[in-house]
Length: 463
Image (cartoon, rainbow, N blue to C red; front, side, top):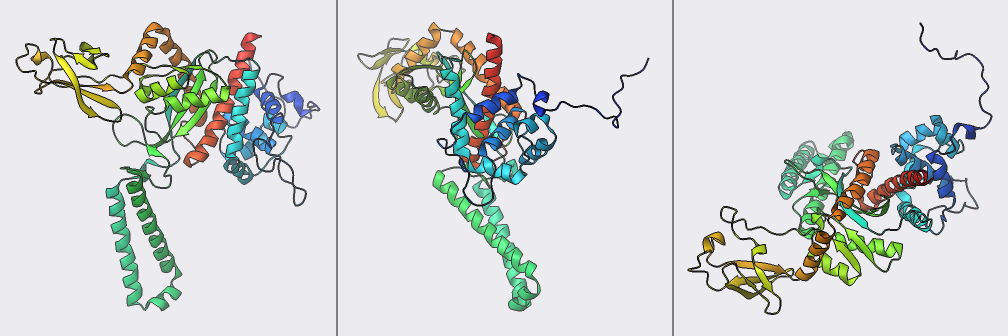
């Protein structure tokens, strides 16, 4: 027995006469080519959408966009790696027609055409809608944390900023003292490196001052040096890495991502309404039904969705009675009388509106709980008090909708979590670019690549 042996490398062979024969008829690269060629690059505001009449010819932005979509679809995002793939990847040779742009040209395209790339992602969703690929009868909204390009070591608080500022001041003082001792003008002329180091320290001192002012202006406790729009996010013990909160809205029937947004929100509490409105406007719908998890439980958002004809299905996160041994009466044990605007406790006593009102809640309190036989099961305070959200009615209607259709939460998990898993694998869970503008561009490429894969799979399943 022998092993399978390949051909002799020196043996002449007759290769197919056209590179097109190397690319399968159902290859994803053909979908990329066909879609990008149909885009209106002038409407999408891509730079150099029309060739210049003078000067050296540039690359067609259609070709670079094809290159990037293929790269994100195949987990190749670096501009240097894309440059190498153009010279050795047969599918890219076919797609780029043997063009091989340098890495700077590739990187500059992504940096300068963020709005156009986001528009291309949106155009693909609308194309799929017009082709009847999805109906958006139910839209699942979810969020996930994606690591920023900045290192966790760049997360600073006011104490660390002050400590580094003191160190920089000390080093500046040492340089100035040395220059004074050796006759500053002659020393600077003799040793330019000392002057350069001193200038670098002064620039760093100015940067630290701006970081401190940023903390005061935005009322934050932490700031990411070098990427101000990123914020420490995440769960578990230890320091939180700089991240962005990526939001997606997914068609529950097909799993296609209809809309996405990159935000600096540390949680999802305020994202239900803006995401729902964005999907509704993009799809040009008169109404919309959305589902999300308890992280989106927000009375203001529930009321705003109802105003905009959006049916929201979100389990409501209720506060618990954390006093005593944990067995005391919760808010659910109290009966609210809407006509009288008051609560009745399990012992039959009345909790009236106290007059204290915040932006989100109204407070109710009992006047005298002394002598109540159930007080030990109710509160350790002198009198029991409760809060009711100003949009409690909208929250209760959301609870009722979830209770009436319990399967809706299972559908949310099955539809919204799969795209995130796939895109995090494509992107290795981390952005390469910095800032909301750059990360939004990256996310648009990832969503576009995911939707292309999903659309091809849906078409294959139907055929």
